[in-house]
Amino acid sequence: MKAIIHVTLKKGVLDPQGKAIAQALHNLGFDGVTDARQGKFIELDVAANTTEAQVKDMCDKLLANPVIEDYRVELRSKS
Amino acid sequence: MKAIIHVTLKKGVLDPQGKAIAQALHNLGFDGVTDARQGKFIELDVAANTTEAQVKDMCDKLLANPVIEDYRVELRSKS
Picture (spheres, chains in turn yellow, blue):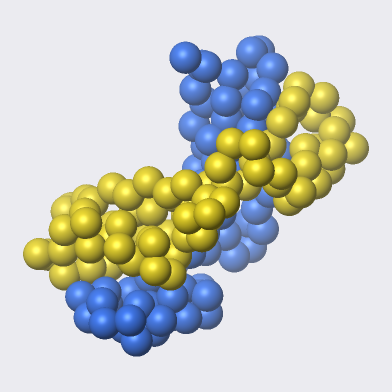
């Protein structure tokens, strides 16, 4: 089974990396971009009996910083 | 409109960050995790007339390294 995790900065937390991306895209001539935010995307291969609660536990303990980051978890059976 | 971009390492490219995550999860007692891969997740606010081709152009020129990374692009109207 696969666990797909998206970790993003909470709304209101300054994202300097995103700002740098937006600025660089402007410099390249992509003027339509008004904002950019960057997050992490983590794909785990997990045992078939893994629950969403376990994956959230992993996020809280290691993968995300719950003070400034949100995460969302999705479990997918391999196909 | 929002452009959602996932940048991941190509299959076969060594992912030391992912290996570190898998090892750290093992050390925390999450034994069900057999592999981890980490990628980037970028959210752009773009003008409403932006096409997928333009966003792919941004990926090729700035957001991804096409030599070792794959990306996928998704356009979403704001709701």
